[in-house]
Length: 361
Image (cartoon, rainbow, N blue to C red; front, side):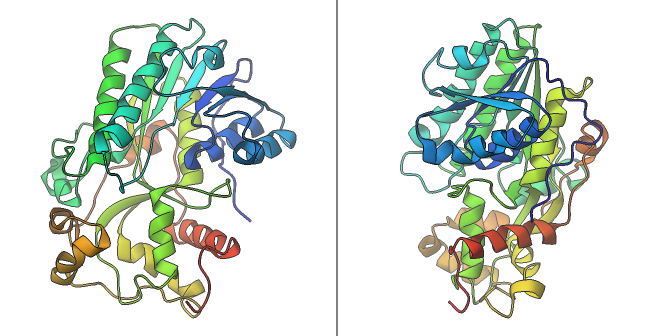
């Protein structure tokens, strides 16, 4: 049912294993599948390699693929814990980092694991002679905080030259964690010249998951489209979106194409929250209470605290268009992005199949 990442144009080196951190994650699942299908031996770093329920889908992929998979226990906050998993690997894909906006202690829950985890993995790369390239899953959040920031970017579009200057522990701490983690990565990479750092900066990731219980924040948003939470409308909060399968392909391109360098905005669509829901209407609108109209900004502003949003977030994102230049990803990674409607339909259909949203609610 779900189209695989298309690796056309990428020559994948299968002569050495590749490490994937956070291998049970939403993005990592498709990345691992793509690598296995290409014939790579994947070293999968996870918290608990004995938790079969968490890793079974990856074992199933390996059974049907020419590649092989080995699991290793690793802890982002423990120096040296990736050394065994990294041994012999030429390419390291560091995808592990929390993505949630509902936190009590942003320093401990977001910033520490993102920054210390990146340092842990990249220090191991420094100490592992086989490593030639590290691909870091950063985010467009390291480039901007709010959609209003786009207007201040050159030509009104975010580019790889732009860095986030407006996030903090108090405002958009997730974005702040991604900024600090990527800064730390470049600091370590620039202090040596044996391995190359390549950074992937995705926008909001959408599309189906390969694991049974995806925890990404994007699933929380899409559930609300179908369960009636947004039946009266959705905010036109500007954002970018990219299909998880396209993002997995971007990682593999970043890991194996010979001339790839620097940061890469990986985003297929300039869109907003309401539009994400509206593309679902033709197929699901007769069965689910999907939002059809834009909520007025003053109403969103008033209701913000009850919806878990700050009023600053509303003022700087609702009715602010989001624009980013994905030209570098097209030129250097060979990216072609699938339609937003396909991504959203596949994602929503999966939630329906798993009972996460029910018709008529």
